[in-house]
Length: 256
Image (cartoon, rainbow, N blue to C red; front, side, top):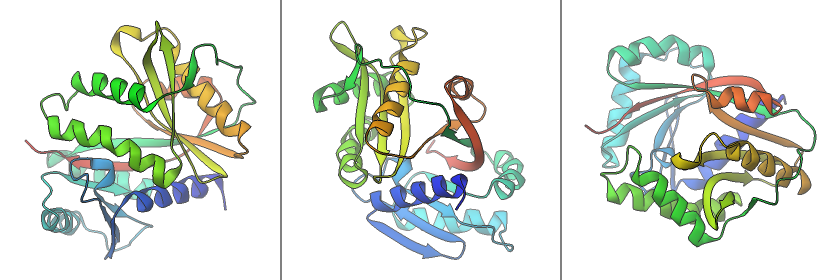
């Protein structure tokens, strides 16, 4: 198994573990969580492999039916195959969908230098506080129920994927954080965020470095993360020793 497949398998395992309903369908599986219907990462349609008969109109119709049956206002389709996602991206854009090209990056560096003077594992209260602060100033600011679900999901992530939450502490407050998911051998770093007043201070780099260090110190032999292929953090991760393995696509139609 190559490293790209290993990362994809880990993400599929993680996504399936977080769902309370995993239903096979014509081109893959649907993954829904009834407790967190407003959290898109827990409620989406996944296209697996390279189905030769995949058709845009039929795909959207199927997603509408599956999400509609679950009572969702959003529609979210993840296509694992990069070539297939790239081929369909123009059609999704023309029809008003948000298109995200995501790159899987594996850590190829050595043991990062220690940053434990400012980075440590967050308490549940610290994690809730930084999540709430970040979400209150983001796109979900006017959706209190969505914010509640996004904060509450952390307990689910810790339970099903051994999630740990690391953060940089400045003046006694958590101002930058990252999730670390694990199956015991593979680790994924996810949800890196820095509160706006504390950006451009190297805190994101420090938290990611400490997450890598924590994963390697606890016996993981493969560490990866997912970055937006069109955003600047990808370059930061590359400078830290992360190497691109491959891409996949996420197509989202959020409620009006």
